[in-house]
Image (cartoon, rainbow, N blue to C red):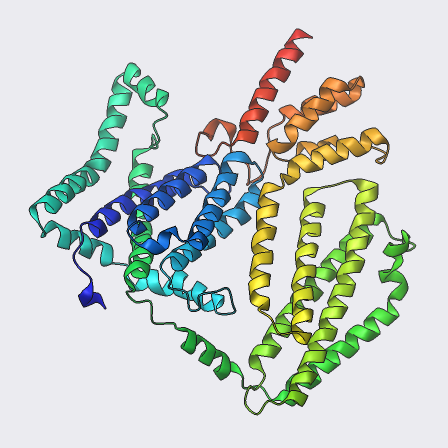
Length: 507
């Protein structure tokens, strides 16, 4: 396959561009302080990828453009919102989504649709293809330098710029120290390189393996180089190989677990179902009641998902018949029912807890997590009685759920709803201190209440909550923040703080 690949000036140029992208990865992106830098990086990487794939007609297929739109929309959230926990989840999802888009565009998925083979696609695209083509970028540069006159001239020029980049950074920093006007000029144009020359050079060096990884991914998928190590046949055969556990061992184990869940629910009926009647067990507070139900939910749901997956993977595939298949079917279905019952109970407890204490980040994300689990277990249950592509709908569910979480503006929603419920009398008190610990997304709602309330004590609390700087490892020092870490919500919060300072001075 490799012998049929014609020498192309595009590959060396791609590697040089990705070397710059590798630097930008470390310069623009900082986990725990994600902002507009991620959006800029996403736009740059997608732009280079589209340029590289543009002559392939399949790039412009509707499905491929839809995936690209998802990538860009996922990258846009970092420019808008200010919740680091959600943005961390969004960044991981963005990475997976981009890699999968590359596979879709180049038709290198194990199967041309969403199915269980997406697990093999993940291993193939994230590990096998990039690392098997890891050093090919520099080989393409060497080949390009030995090529035609026009191509070699362009490459020599780009190589010259790239090689002198660290020296350029060093010289610029010296000139900035020598002359105040030049230093102001660099800051006026938001000089994107670090003032610490050693840090910048380190970013350039660390960007090299990033560039090699990305080149291996893009080049390998476009030309089909080292993409055949994992195939649909080998992946499915692996599933058959793992099916070594005796059927009776699987059936008996699942039967014991189902029996345990049945006894457990029967013995705890009054405790688990008290939430449906808006009742609270004696000697327990609402906080203790909801927290205990949530942790039970997490453990049981995780265990049940793992058990169902392991059982279906490890059970012997040979010699299966309708009778034995139905045993596994009904036992799986009963586990799903028990889990859904517990989720419904825990969800009712959480609603009861929110009714009395309002919303918090943990309560909202817990509710989101429970709703995702409901859909997953419903899909598993339906899959036992009706044949359909359950993996496809599970993946779509997870993807849409993450998109909703990223764009729901949960901190803004929490502040807005808690304030509304307090004003309506549904909440006995407003936990201003807790609202002040939210991200900058909550600031406009706190400021609106500050302007409308006549309660001076509440005004003082709101002013303190708005002006206090967030603490914790997820929040950066404002003095160290720049365009890489900013977003529209934090920018709006800064304007509100400045306005609040003026109002305080006027008083």
